[in-house]
Length: 39
Image (tube, rainbow, N blue to C red; front, top):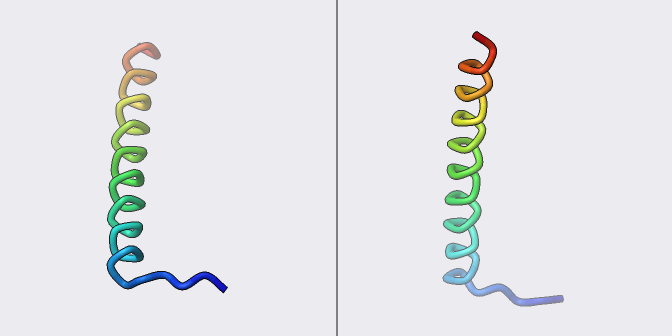
């Protein structure tokens, strides 16, 4: 099994959180753009 240090695990969780926030922000922008094009 692979040992994961608490610091490394915390860093990974931070990265995952950043990626998710970027993805949700990107999806909102795409939805807004699609709504504008739909007018």
